[in-house]
Amino acid sequence: MAKDVFQTHIEQIWNNKDASGIERFIAPNYRGFDAEELISGVDGYKKHYETLTTAFPDLRITVEIILEEDDRAAARLSIDATHQGEFLGIPPTGVPVHLTVEAIVRVENGQIVEEHANSDALGLLRQLGVFPQPPRVPALIF
Image (cartoon, rainbow, N blue to C red):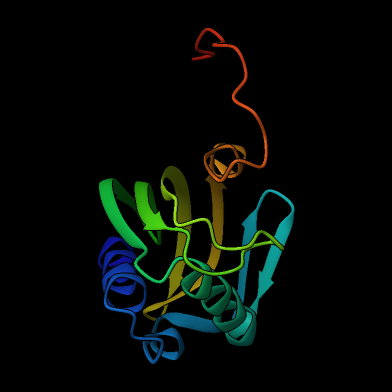
């Protein structure tokens, strides 16, 4: 069930740009964690959605792989979008961007109550020209 809820929420809310799905899939006590940001509740999720879809209106999420265990789903996602609106004070650049995200969600009663995500925020900022590209570093796979 967790896997289906997670995938369906991505399709309805993010890929179909249907914000009405937020109240269907996001629990009132939702807490989302991504690096330094905490997203709380339905209102916090709506604000997060608005921020991203304003800056990247053509944002598209692809679920590359998704696994489920009990009330949790873990996924590797890829995101493709074009920077068409202000984002973190960065004016629109028109630059197409691609980034990856790993996310783990916990589902209760058909809604996401908790999400831990790790996104390539630095890679996104590099694509937008905020930071220069660093020298190539060997992979750190453990």
